[in-house]
Length: 108
Image: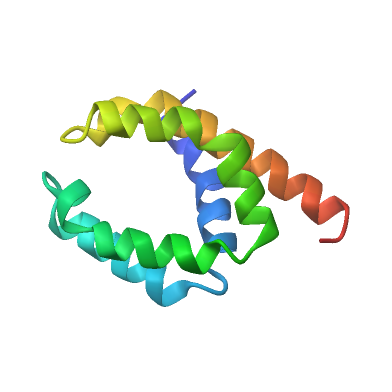
C-alpha cells in the first residue's frame, strides 16, 4: 500500500477527532513538527491535552482501544524514528476508517 493511500483514511480520522479539539490537535502537530527528533519528550504536555480532549468522544475512545496498540508500541520502540512505524500507521488508519464508516452508517 502506498503512503498516499494511507493519507485519506488517516486524514479523515484526524479531522473527526479534531472537530471538538482543534486547538489541541494544532498545538500537538506544531510541537511534533518543530521537534522532529525529540517530539516524544518535548510534546508530552500537548499529547496529554489532546488525549484529555478526545477522551470525551465515544468513537475516539473506540478507535484508541481497538486500533492504536500496534502503532503506540512501535512508536515506543522507535522514539527517534517514527517513520519506522509506517506499516503500523497504515493499519491504524484502516482500522480507524472502518470504525468511522460503521459509526457513520449507524448514524452516530
